[in-house]
Length: 253
Image 1 (cartoon, rainbow, N blue to C red):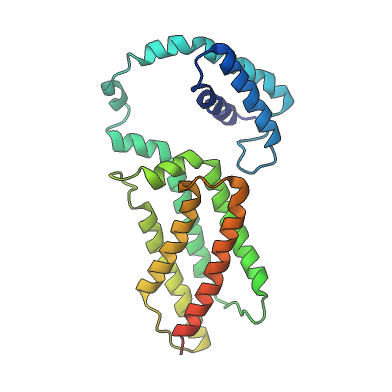
Image 2 (cartoon, rainbow, N blue to C red; image 1 turned 180 degrees about the vertical axis):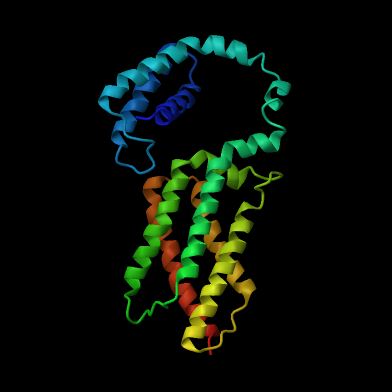
């Protein structure tokens, strides 16, 4: 287990014990956390499976932390706003520092999709490729990002629900604009390949694209359990796939 993963487990356990005052109750919550992690070790959103040899080490570290909570609280009580702003210029800088990793990762995902779209020179013929195969591939690709969101659930919740007034306030809209441009290029490429004219408007593409992106965010905003999110995402992918097909047929001449 790396130091980063070890630290993340400790932070999760600190959150769990923060609701309890008595030391005995806190120790009980730590043991409960370790039991739950063992049960969830196959889940993709688990930080990392905890080896048996590392459980005692984690438990000992948390017991040491619990023993120091009184001292830590005393020190934290002396921390002023000025001390915080010596490290962060303002509240916006502090907020961005919390979500910077997730923000940059998402932009990298979008950039990767854009690059792969630019490299597509052969139209997928739905008569030759089974719809279910295409849908399954789209579903698996979408779930890669959804699983990442669940692995960083709290920070994505901050981005989606608490970013007003920050530099990432228009995060969803910015992503939508980039995906809209990508989708328009694919539409124009396909219509050119088929030698047909499309009447579909860019604003229509924008609205549909934003609906898709927003629907992915909804699973975080509404705290959909990870065990259930796959079914939800599959429905979105199916709806998008056949919806785009219907829209293209309606607008192509």
